Image 1: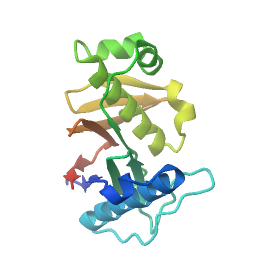
Image 2: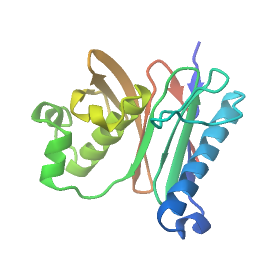
Image 3: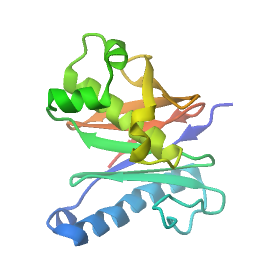
Length: 190
């Protein structure tokens, strides 16, 4: 039986993009939860609230786990019956120093001749999605590794001794990643 997850990516409205500072971050966070609510509706899950613990880790609601990501132009959300991670980033140029901080030589070889900035953001968003799924956060970044580039949309990422299957989606100059493991994904762009 195939079980689907429904990551939802939504364009941020101008009224939120125009905000500044903490007001903007808070509005983006609330708007990202709207994408998670849309994911819950598509999944036919009942989720009433999207709360985090004191460390900022999403708390399950009615046994449903959730994850969100937000940038100034897009937000993303997803729900699942298992812990889940989602991340999104705009694809842009990166310095050699930053590239080498995120990908070691073995990881870089996995990407072969692919463009440096695409390889960087595939790896970075996949790693962050895994760190969200494991509730470790960015402090675990040095311990998460790209083990296999399966194809142009899937990676196997290892954190400590466990491997995770992560799917990437490219859209409008952005790249999103979700820990999908044994699920299939049906992306929604809105």
